Image (cartoon, rainbow, N blue to C red; front, side, top):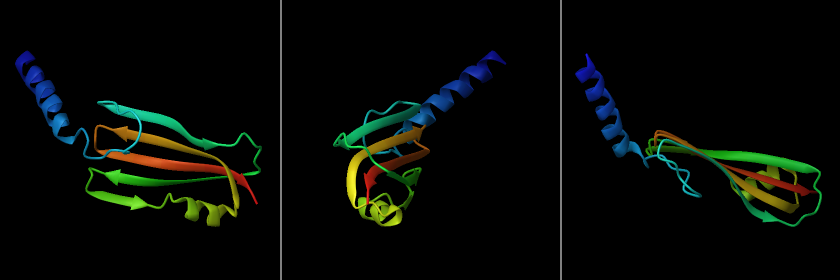
Length: 107
C-alpha cells in the first residue's frame, strides 16, 4: 500500500511538470502550484468615482477567452480619465490562469 501511495505522489509531481506553465497569466511572479498577485501598473493619486474590472482566462494554454483591454473597460464603465490601473493574476497548477485588469477613473 505504501508503495502505491509513493508511486501516486511521484506520478502527480512528474505530470505537474508537464502542465506547470501551460496556463500562465504571463505577468508577475509565478508559483509552482499556485499564483495570486496584484500588480500596480499606473496611478496618479487622484480620487476616482468609477471602477471597472475585466478578465482574460486561459485553460491548459489551449483555450483563451475574454477582453481586458483598456478601451473595452473605458467604454463599458464610461471612464474618460483613467487615474489608476492594476493587474491581478491567478494561476493554479498550469491548468487554469487569468489576468484581470482593474481601472479607476472619472468621467
